[in-house]
Image (cartoon, rainbow, N blue to C red):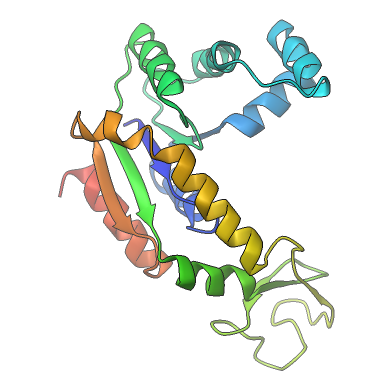
Length: 216
């Protein structure tokens, strides 16, 4: 089972991908993580990638596809893949088709987590974490049981990500719409796109995704 998981930052893609990894043994494939790994390992392609990034140049789609191909070749043939944040353009979608076909793989589903922008702004801007252990909280949905004291470690210092503000969230949403708009029709024409309410609670979203993967 090979799928593309789409959704703006804060929609819960990471949480749902982690569940699929744990429950189905799938592999989450994030282009950012793979690039960093290739650079760290000092592979030939990794060295090229490092030079391009240091020079601040646009990363060529063909080189990204080559790096993805190298990564896919390390996986077991029957390992299901979750493509997270890729492809983002029609050209990348074409290259992914080529990568899959040359490895005897097919794309089974493109699942988009749909969100309400105003509700997403509230979800993200209300987040904060324990500075000591990293436990997550929220102004509205999950306050510590004892005010100012972490439920897990008893820490009394909390922090918020500086980019968890309304302006940044709305900018990210606009970028997501601009980047994903071109590729959705490509997959819709092939009957691959399914949509899930990303604003539902985590368990319900997980159930909806599992139903799609099981053909229910």
